[in-house]
Amino acid sequence: MNTKTLLGALIAGVVAFLLGWLIFGILMMDYYTANMVQYPGLFKNPPEIWAIAIANIAWGILYALIFNIANVRSASKGFSTGLTLALLMVLGFNLFMYAQMNLYNTKILAIDTVLNALLGGLTGAVLGWWLGRPSKS
Image 1: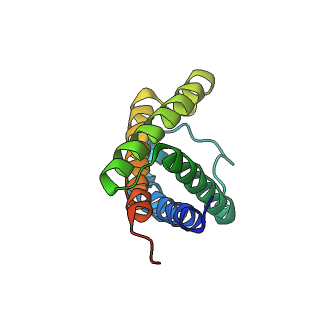
Image 2: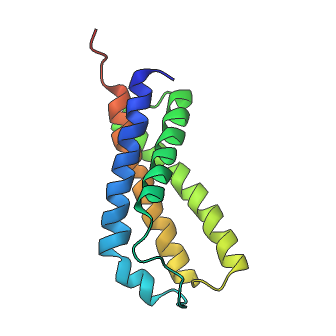
């Protein structure tokens, strides 16, 4: 992996972290709280921010690796590729969680899948734009 791809992975991780904080930590937090089964100790307060940051960097690296293989080099291709990847990964994860746990209902399963797909698309758009920039030589 070259320097441009590594930097792109880091940028994608930061974008995912900030957009995730905005979408899930601010805009939709009350919605999630109201639509999930609550029990004492379910959520850490405060959450482990370092773990969230590392998780987002891992997603950024995964996206950068896939985008390199798929030759994604534009914001529009990045958006569609990121949206598709996130949609399939999150749908699979959410359906497994729904099948095995009483944590949330089908309405929040659908909302969470759509929001995460959008997050993946926006992150992918930034990464695709970054990877498509001409190299300064």
